[in-house]
Image (cartoon, rainbow, N blue to C red; front, side, top):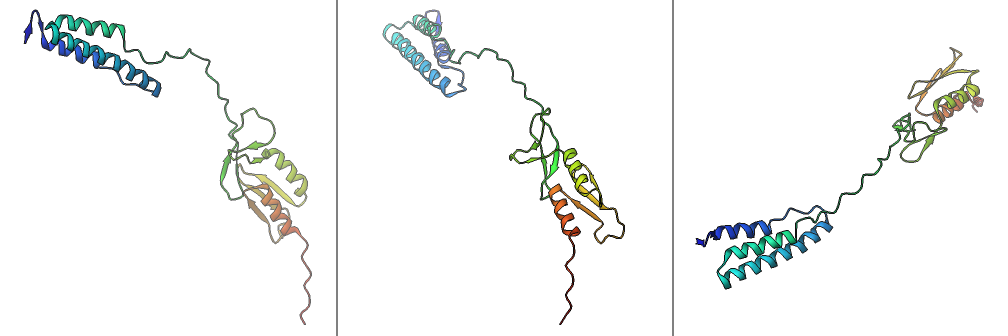
Length: 191
């Protein structure tokens, strides 16, 4: 349907363009989008009322164009100023087994000093420190070694009843050595 030089479909296209808004990404943008959509709907109503009363779609399209220019779809918040990126320090990564034989990993910075710490906050001494302490305590009777995951003690006496001990933690190794090195209770004669 033609009215003057303007087709009514052009008016419908202008209405569609006025109401077509990009989606919002955040709740704040959604509120701004709803407010903008309300202003654009009011402009569409004014344009339709103008066509009904005057029969002039050209001026109605002008009303819509002015509303779109006056209320642009710029409800996205401004992008934040670029900030310095935080540098995440590399974690130590030293591993050890817990008493259940499960691997735990140190999450402290790679240049930390002292004990290691896992995600649960449990700490353990560096293997070199523990190895020195175990060798000082048990080195006369056992060869002590750290395999990278297990602690090993081998008795120096080949005739020892318990020659080799392998445990996931140094505490378990020491406990096992104490139990096997303790003097045996003398047997009581039977009655």
